Length: 298
Image (cartoon, rainbow, N blue to C red; front, side):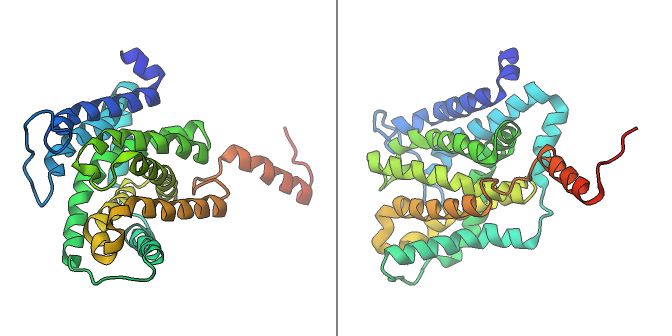
């Protein structure tokens, strides 16, 4: 098994992430909050059953699988490098503003467009920051050390940033699919909800990849951007746009596609990833030759 993981670390991670999470969600899926096959009710904590129903599987999957595969493939040095990005807080203030404000601003714009300009006064605004912090240490910590810190960084060593995002986005979406059998997807079940969610994951993963690359692979910034979406939708969306409460994911997917296309266009597909040195040197050498003549070699 160790040899197989070393030979195919990304495939091993994707397989383990899905398998461990799905096993952790089996009871939740079969419970009264899911298919109702077993007569079990998950208790409500902070207004939701997801803390006890979803989080155990989430922690088992992406972060747990990244820990296992990194330990097997790269040993202690790899674990230190992987964990080190979790504490990479020293990033320009403007990127914190982007992570915390750009997503809510974008959702406000797309919600306003689809609601025809009808915006209600939010009644739960005071809950936004506490829930953001909670989401940071739950959803953000459970997912981002796996999807971005482990998978994206390794994918971009082998493929272009755009191809890497195209690989990771669908896997990220599929990982969530069993939750559509539970209350987690309340109001968005069925094939239409599943398709809209997949479009959102694939396109928003482009945005997440851009943030990860532009902040020197800062995991805290990726976590903040990720949970900004969750928190805005959980706390403010239905308050601000009551007429769009049942179509939050389809509307969000439209905004996410627009943002992804803009980033792809503006970065020419690099998604904020630095140009490899080997592609820069020949250009620089050619310029030097043109200006000063061919260099002398001993």
